[in-house]
Length: 601
Image (tube, rainbow, N blue to C red; front, side, top):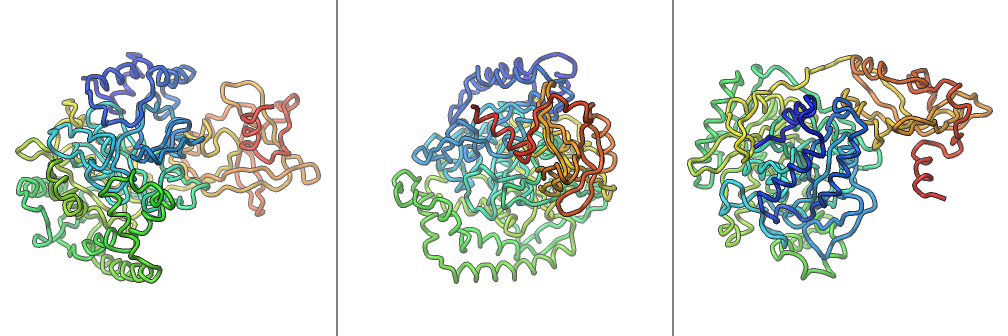
């Protein structure tokens, strides 16, 4: 079986062994061979996927960071023109625009295959609360695949796509990763835009990444993890923290605070995982896990449950018969909370947060089992609430405490079922987690997901550039967020600082020629100029140099004056290039011009 991990796929493209259309045909053959329709709620027709691949013919494989990479998304994320169900057919709507994160991945060359099954309204950690059938755990169909992002995790584990997007409010990006022998990255809240996501608990929701390796997860994050000024919950966070692995203090729950719910095999796997961490040079530090456990209880036993009710609004009252009975019971439980309870919950969380701070003084990150055990589909059907609650023991507290986390394969029980180790750190520490996770995964070894393909020894992440000088740059057209060349900023670890306008001293022109439409910005002077929409990005000095070196004529870099009076380096155009170009200055920006093109005459 040919692996779809990003390293193998990029090597095949680089050597000319295959094209994106070849890979798409392979993917669809694998999907047919796997023969589990419950993985998918929607799958693009082969002809549509091939049409996406054909668009890449105009690009060199080295020019796009996710060139020809097949991926899937959980069906609570929007895909323009395709119904979003959130696991409930009666709720379905057809969005006109894709979720921001989906747009970015496609602009970086990734090919979207389909939308995957989930626990309805992303409410659950089991993967069985769905009217679309339970997708089978690829290691043993008697056992749950994990949820709520069940289909996304299985699609990656079975080798049907290279990576997939899930979501993670209570653990839905980590639990199914642990049950499927893959990597599940739950980024910091707000790092990946949630615009175009059906909310579960909107203040806590995260878009998560399922991948075969930690290196793959980082490569996807480098494209997906960009500030989105259109998303009120997006945050300006650079997820590139890191330090030497052999100097890490790794917190672990005290022995008497560990819960495995009678599963001695899962306990054995956790102890073996701790041995691997020590072999890597980490220092294990027992900590008091009780404050974290108490925070975890707040998520489903506190007023945050009311956010699930707020997310569904009138739909719940008008279509209660269309909602899974367990999901309905959970969401209706929110009705007992009022505004006073919300504030009491916030005060309780603040108190517990302060208690956890004392534990963080002892450690750089926390290592816990992804789950204490796994259950069969039959067991969950018999006792759906209590067993689901058990699965959230080591996951429910993470978003409430504004932490980042990654679940990494940690070996197998004697019955052949995989286990996971979750590494947890502060906000913005994704690189540190993936750095240790990659080394840990290599220590564990084994295969990629359920594919049978041996784990590659590729564990080196791109070099860490801590405290490197940053240089700001103003972009005006095809490099804006969501535009075709934005990936060039992303791959240089660019971070969006702000969206703003220039001083009213510029004119903007739609340039002619070139495969990708671009504008030209000319300094005109205060009397004849306009304020033009721009974005200010920050790049590491080395990345800035590489980025600028690839700017083609007639564009170049000069000093722009912004509306607040600041002066920043940014894109300007040589005057000869706009002689016959269309003056679009009165529209105020490139996006406004593109909107007129879409609208037509």
